[in-house]
Amino acid sequence: PSVARNRGVENSRNDIIVFLDSDTVLEESTLAAIKEHFVDEKKVRCVNGRCSMRPITRSLGTIYKALIEFTWHNHKPELPSRSICFNTRVGAIDKNLVLKIGGFDERFKKADVEDYEFSGRLVKITPIDARNDILVRHDFPGVVGTVRSYWDRSSKWVDLYLDERKFQSGGSSA
Picture 1 (spheres, one colour):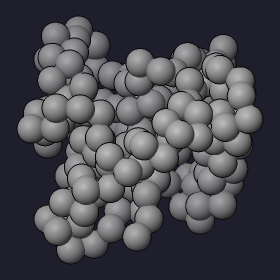
Picture 2: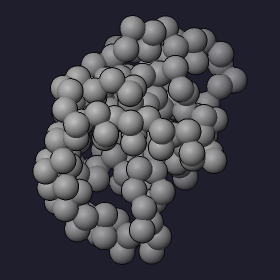
Picture 3: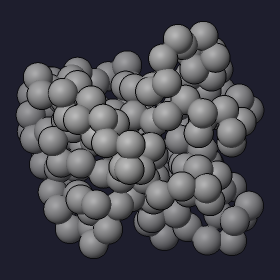
């Protein structure tokens, strides 16, 4: 994903880049909310969305995961106004910010923690806004897939911790 995201940014013709993961679908009002955000030149030039409570695939595990993701945003003190992790599942950013920090680190070959590493560099130069009306439906894995994903990512999160000597609180925790 890092390589694809960087090539997309490099070849884009517009100033605002909207990122979506391959397992997400935009809710109907999302593009209008992103446009509204960037019309105001005084707004932060980077904004996150969130997952809706309606997963694409419905099972007990995916419904639970969607509910957890949705309500997590309601309990983060910096939301809905600020975030510390840029969300590639649905986020929009000024192209110049991506270029300024050198894009996504292409050493990350899979969808692991490349967005967390990117965010760590991004928040050093700009805050990240968050809006509750920028929504996607997500095709979450079931319980086994979620456990496997977190297991696979845990070693990458440890690597990021060792680089910064702190855990990032955007979507992960110590």
